[in-house]
Length: 309
Image (cartoon, rainbow, N blue to C red; front, side, top):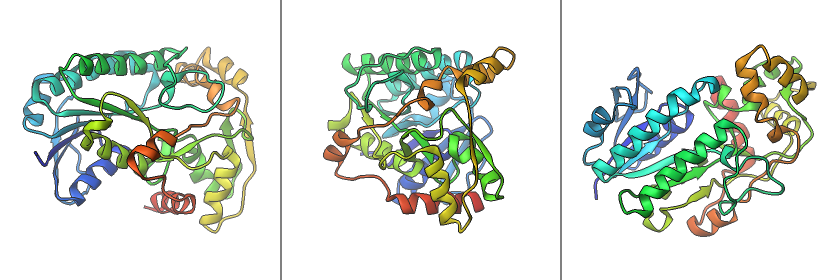
């Protein structure tokens, strides 16, 4: 079996994935537009546009797996950026025979009544969730047709080192660490699931390796839900800092701002995530793979250490 892996994207999940693969002795190539060095020992970095299927195929040829860890940060650009990128990744996997391991999210489920689990249908109501659901549907159709081998892992809101603006709580954490009040989106008192980015990477690697896991989605092992205020308080306590005042930004106000600020309009479309309990059920993942999430105390420590770094 090939020990060559290609990781597209150098955000928190991409870096953790590349690190895990490199630490076990695999040959790892990280693909980004800039080719910037992640600082990971033994990892090769390549600058190319992953939406270019020919260029990506050249890099991926002979690889055991192609790990999609890309995450276009600007919601307003998703309809422009994701379709050609997703098409290129799927085409590359089909051409090379590499397992196509996808870092997904919970958006495809849309508003839910109860915990989210992998057997829940994709029923998104906003265009970002519909787009992500379509990406998975295309990959699954190719898998079922025997053209590719694919799997998708779906994590909740990110915490952990390097998360920064990729997580709603970590986005305001630097301000909280200075002892200042912070404002969070939606209600601060509703239970919400938080997934460590290291656990996302761990499941992505394990799922790519496991042929029995292919052809479906998996919920990343995640700790018991906490409110936004509880998470901030837990992380601050770990850092030896006092709790801060946590203010709530009502979704209705966010929608109003969104009439003139396109990005806020995109965030407001996901307001259901912060207006009611939004939690995951990872029981199927734990049973199949035999591991759970990183202990919460360690998640908090990792988050603080990542912020300091």
